[in-house]
Image 1 (cartoon, rainbow, N blue to C red):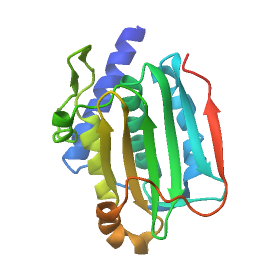
Image 2 (cartoon, rainbow, N blue to C red):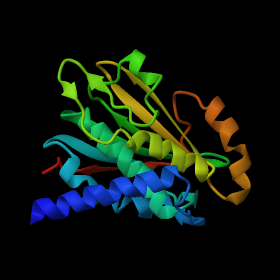
Image 3 (cartoon, rainbow, N blue to C red):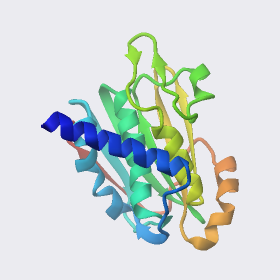
Image 4 (cartoon, one colour):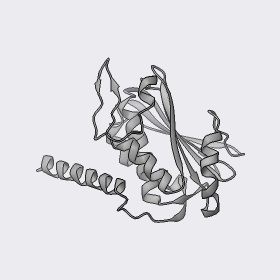
Length: 212
């Protein structure tokens, strides 16, 4: 029975992804606090995090707000963290948030196996999976990253990545802080440096226990 339920849930999720690509899913627009949103992340990804991998949060101590669809932003970050977990069997995954003048930057950083340079060009293509020939083809529908970028752009945001094979990857989500900032986000994505520019003030680091 559990297998049947699990299969139906996976099928439902796949249908939701296809509807999103077809532009049939509606997005809600609101302004919400990112720290509160991330408080839900730990339980959602617990089963996906390998036992020897820790999940950490590097958050500003001040509240940081995002404009967009709260559930879909959570889905994008969830996709990025579970993707990082596939490539990080023994290490650390960090979700780092930094506030900027018109945008909020969310970096999902892992110190896993990384992604080969030749795979980066098609990383966000639909139905594309990264093949690490030294191990296996990682599972999934091949829609996760493509859907994540699609959702980010539909909300006025952007998603991009950098990786070094053998050293890990960083996936960066940029989102507007309010409705007026949406038009400027593309320029911010294009000019964003490799190092994030955290907002002034101290940050809070929270470490989750390794996955069960």
